[in-house]
Length: 464
Figure 1 (cartoon, rainbow, N blue to C red):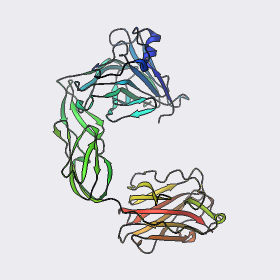
Figure 2 (figure 1 turned 120 degrees about the horizontal axis):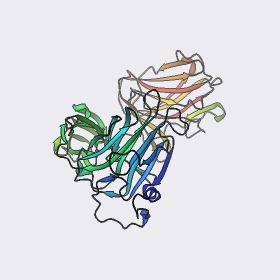
Figure 3 (figure 1 turned 90 degrees about the vertical axis):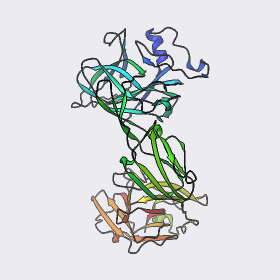
Figure 4 (figure 1 turned 45 degrees about the vertical axis):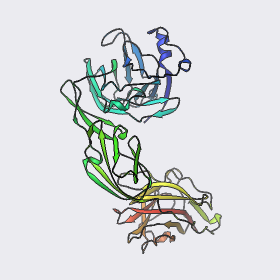
């Protein structure tokens, strides 16, 4: 969605337009702050000191407007391009500070806005920064699909838990793409600032895991992020408004810290085998939903490599093997909807590259950009290792884009656990495959596909 990026200092912009004298000081010359500024203003007739700006989409979408404003002398003007604009199909950007601010005494970001026509700003919010090529969105908050009219109106973006924002650089961000038949529009924002309003209240604290008490079995050691969530706030206008925000705003608790630690925002770390219950609070309020974790401890890994292939390289087209030069693979996991698989690259004994698929029901391996002409090939080979004792069958599928055909092969027996299973399958065994001149996809699956197999794969190649 972001097809280009443009950065410049708002401090320099201010100097050019002479809105605020003395704001052209080089930010690198500023002394290091011992106490972060609590300045609430982002834009009030001009920009508060220390702001930078990064633009996306059509990078010339932003400017200052001295004719159209809610009050004072100027507003921010944003031009959303028409769809198909060669300079970008959308308008987006972030306003951020090089030196963090303490926003913990506020509970809402407010601004006045109007538009050239009734339309929708796709996303607005705060907590996003893009300084010096480093992106930070730990406490990013998003208000989706904000409807703006041709009349100046005040808008509110509540802060889920302001105590988290004692060191924040992301003051405001926006993203807008054309909605009405691809037609662009203009919108203006003025009086952009953080406030503390007693009329902002929770109506729904939000939920984790859809508000359900979930059970996760066979979880291994490692870091796990609690999913993002939404909460609803009642605004001074009487309207209930939902915002989206990451789980970093939550305070997590583990009932058994020897199994899972919670020392990072929104993250629990499994450190040992055992069981623990993860619960969450947003501020002082408990969030509905929980996670009971039954951990098996450290993952079970292969201790030896699969047998090194002996087929001559002249007779091989390889997708993944240290023994051959591999063809280009676009992705080992496109994370298609319905696929539960998670892939991890590992090494056995520090040298042998292996791909691990956790929670495998099915996964696509895509190489569409450089498809394979396998006319001369007779077999496909794959080595598979699993720690799971299972009756599930291992399934391979091959897709040929020239004939739009897909062949299916089901391994006749369950995989043997804790050893390498060497599968060398004739292409003629793939039922439904009517061509092999433009192969672009291999699918690995577990049958039934609702199951979650844990596998390691190596030496995936075609040969004759």
